[in-house]
Image 1 (cartoon, rainbow, N blue to C red):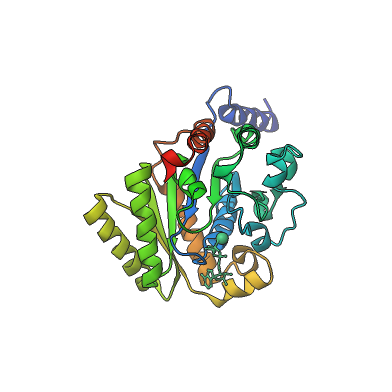
Image 2 (image 1 turned 90 degrees about the vertical axis):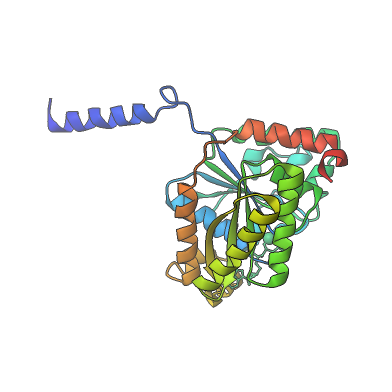
Length: 298
Ligand SMILES: Nc1ncnc2c1ncn2[C@@H]1O[C@H](COP(=O)(O)OP(=O)(O)OP(=O)(O)O)[C@@H](O)[C@H]1O
Ligand SMILES: [Mg+2]
């Protein structure tokens, strides 16, 4: 057998090893990103993290679930023709509204001014869930960008997801509100896998001190250990990138903020993940929470 034949055979074997027939496909990791206070940088974090993870070879989807003020598309500089709004109304399929962004990430655009997802009428809710179920097998990681605060929609995503990321800044008001979300997530929505990201930190020390405050109160009053995933510096290049409508990990890859997001992506891939439920369970759970209405969420 020639060297070239041998190389081809090895490639075939390697490909087979990755084949879903021989090895069950890995379940999608579903992460809800939220905050107590608004404007702490969730959407910028989600978009840039998605790109960083994609650079690590992951297939990443962003679900823009902040339907009141959806803006992941703006941060990405994209102008999607269709949104979840069209899916809900059965005018488009999920595949038709999905748009490909930098580094191959996929955005499911939210569309502004829509009713809260959790309050959709039965038929619309069913149409949406049915479409979302088709993501199974397509994504390694699904990042759900939510609005700030404790709306029914946000809480349903918090409860149904495998894990939750809470973004805060070092401001005392943001920390207090982050703790408020964590408390409700733990006590009312049985979410135990919670990571903290500190955005707009002056330096690494301010980042870890801020996280430590949240970790300490959560351990003491909620008997839960949070993970500190990392801090992102306050960085004028982030502001500049937002103005230019390009993600900062692409526009300014050597900026402090971009380096921090890359570190967080690496840390995230290291986190233990034994409890993944998969997308079907996630969306079925979500559907049940929405069906049961306010009883189970508030
Ligand atoms: N690391 C950072 N350094 C400097 N400025 C930042 C940083 N992160 C975010 N910002 C600024 O904060 C603004 C708000 O960010 P973003 O829209 O991501 O917040 P959000 O939490 O998603 O807001 P909302 O609660 O409205 O959804 C950005 O437009 C940017 O100007
Ligand atoms: Mg946002």
